[in-house]
Image (tube, rainbow, N blue to C red; front, side, top):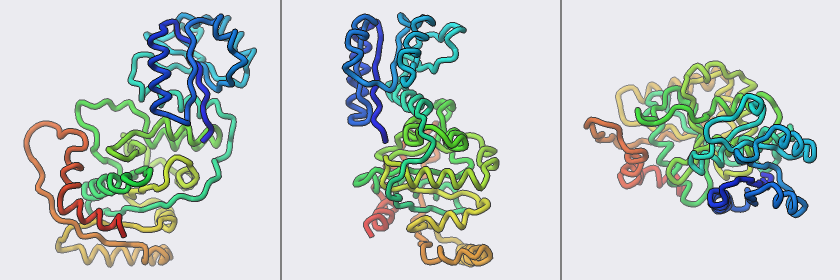
Length: 341
């Protein structure tokens, strides 16, 4: 991914410096940051750096000044740092909220970088190893297996988890529902322009030791995805530069799902012993043959997992608490054995 050169022009010097230093530390090698507290000092040193984005504080948000800066540097994106919104005449500029978390601000920077990037093709890199997870008989088991496998693989590599489940139930009542998710990434890919890697960075969230694209909040978003949407998504994931492995959790079948599974090096099918399990395997084999996708039969690995004793008390469980418990259990030992094969 191209390195982003960011300049912060903000009257509050302590805020500007702290923000710049934290961004440098968190995004070392990916975002370089300079900061200034006045426009005169910035213009004196303007020739010393080549910024892609300028983050402009409220003291400098005058339309005439912004238009002048844009005219001088048409290749630079101007982004407004806002506390309580901006005036109507400035609504055409992208906005990042000043007093949100640094992670939120960094995501905003990547989102803006993706929009400003004129590149209209995907980055070309070696294809990443893609691991599939498919357990239509138990969505909860599928999700827990995926999260535990993500933690184990992320001990040694950078791994991204993408779920196509309709109702994954990861958020609790106290969490916000306004974060961007898989549906936003798919919408971006439909445009076929902009910086794919930067847009992916702006949407991804941490999940323990690994990262994930938050799953869709509205199941209708998955129903609305076309065959071309899935092709765009796989291409973007395989050719992104940030992650070495991709975990793809398949949900309900969609047009072309069996063809997409062919791109996976392995497909894990976690299950717990029950009466109909053998019948389900027979049915999946039959469906695969109907779709002439016999190539994936040798990639399917059915993984028997122990049953879980869930806590049934009131209240929400702490984020990641169950995954942490599973990692130190027979469940985690089984998954770790797969990861070390």
